[in-house]
Amino acid sequence: MFVSIVVPCYNEEEGLREFHRQMTAAARALCGNRFELILVDDGSTDKTWQVINALLAEDRNVVAVKLARNHGHQLALTAGLSTVRGDLVLVIDADLQDPPELLTPMYEMMAREGADVVYGQRRSRAGETRFKKWSAEAFYRLLAKITRVHIPVDTGDFRLMSRRISDQLVQMPEHDRFIRGMVAWLGYKQVAYEYDRKPRFAGSTKYPLLKMISFAADALVSFSMVPLRIATYVGALLTTGLTFVGIAAIMSWIFSGTVPGWTSLTLLVVMISSVQLLVLGLIGEYVGRIYIQSKNRPLFLISQIHRRGRVPQLSTDSLETIESPPLNTLLAHSGPELRRSVYDEASS
Image (cartoon, rainbow, N blue to C red; front, side, top):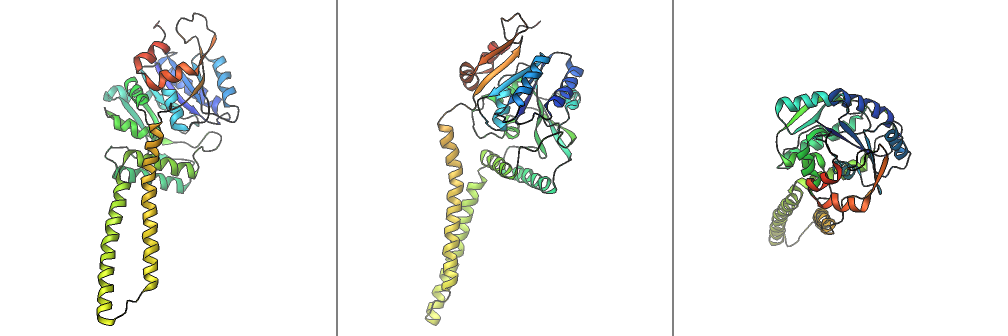
């Protein structure tokens, strides 16, 4: 068994060494040295890339991946998944909120249940504000009600997956990615591992309020047509209401000769115009995503990949760099067999 551990990193220089220490200890406890720790630098503005390369010089199990720019957490995670070589793939963040030592019990649950995915389900969320806990709880329950795909509540991207899940996930071409939903959409047997989430070891959250709202919008639009249907329902409701208003106005004119209520009429016009703009905005969200997808641009651009003694046909334990142009074409448009022919080394 060979395990790949994929870690998106954005401005994580303060806690990355401690994460490496805990994660490698957990991996060695499970499978000795048969693992790779793929650290993906998502266009960090601090010294994250320097720290990653320093760890690479110290530990031959580290794989350093540098993206050409900041693509965001979900695409950085996809870039890391595109380089995996393992039979099993662990997805985890570098902030140590998700405990690395859970790798072994998650693997044991996977073997016991015969599952393809073991996802972490949070019992508690230490170090987070009451608003964030409440908003996350409300969001996941709303998502569960309006989507046809069963997306488990109170989960993140922390999960252990089989290689076939990882490969199929990379081949899904959508740009606005909600990976925990995409994994759920794939199906197969998926089981929950409950755990208590810890506070961040160092640094600050990379998901402020605006990013959280954008991420929630991606999830809702990617996995549900309900927003568009709500626009239809609101239009039907307004039509019904205005029909009764029109009947009342006609009756008032017949019996009193006047039609009172210019203020209310103005308010109705403003309200209807606002609803129309809201509906156009909802339609625009879907159309905009179709437009971006139709350009068929690569999901991400990899600037560099550094491995020590991991590239085929290299007998020395030296630092090697694979440039991005062949990788970009390879990872964006090929299946797992072609990727494996480039990344896998002969078993020893």
